[in-house]
Image (cartoon, rainbow, N blue to C red):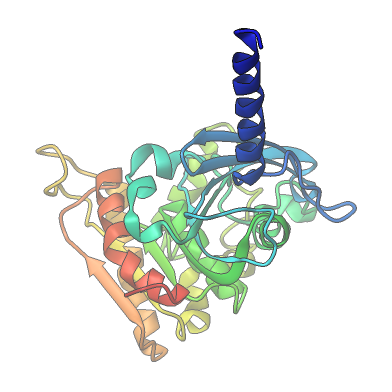
Amino acid sequence: MTAAAPIRRARRLLLVLAALLFTLAPQAPATAAGPRGGAEVVATTQVADRQLDLSVRSPALGGRTVRVRLLTPDGWDPRDHRRHWPTLWLLHGCCGDYTSWTARTDVADLASLRDVLVVMPEAGWNGWYSDWWNHGEGGDPAWETFHTEELRHLLERDWGAGSRRVVAGLSMGGQGALMYAARHPGMFRAAAAYSGSVHPLLDEESAARIMGFFAGQGDDPLRVWGDPVAQRRIWAAHDPYHLARRLSSLPVYLSCGDGTAGPLDTAGAADALEADFDRQNHALAAALHRTGARHLTTHFYGPGTHTWAYWQRELHASLPMLLRGLGTGR
């Protein structure tokens, strides 16, 4: 026997072990096509431990490809179609994207989410979680259809998402969380909104501020819901205040600051947007109380601006309620 023989046998053994470990390790499919004509995953990217980005081509978005970030639970294996995980949807705000929650908070480090699939979908820089009116023509973008139909079914069929879902979001995403919970009964078991735009029809100032987000970027502010007077019915259909009765049976968490400098701000900070949303949140809370809502939690903490430090804190504060909704709370 030559001296090289043991070395060759050791190399073969290492190759066999490596192949076995690769086979046993949880792997995301390279692509997961949707139904014919439906949304499909065209690529995946592992960006960090337990963080997987899906590139999804969506008919509801005119065939464009957008990203969805998954924070996966321990033991998650998308090839195991027998196991489905309770799911938390985290919605980003205006001017953010699908990376915002993991980039700006400690959500990826929370031990209480290690047995939950967290879904953080792209919703457009200023998409408002809506199928845009587009002057009566509809069509692209249709964010609500993408999220509540295309993405929901794709995740449940191919990526281990279960039927127990809760939703939370900040600012524009807070409005989206409450809208989705109200407009799609049974889809979510609880909803939380942090500094949410929850009553854009409160007054002319609130409506004008929403429209100003578009005008400031050179876009047509009438494309989303139309004019707040001429198309008031469309605005009301996307205004959580006007959907309060549909939310009254769900656990709902509302939080907001009043726009003045708070404990997590620099001295002298002031925020007119947060002050406006504070008024909207108080109005929604009153409407929910009038409907007899029994599962409403509010944290209107006074001084505080429209910033991530508060939203991370409020995610932590609302998680026990959200996890109870999933059936995983202690």
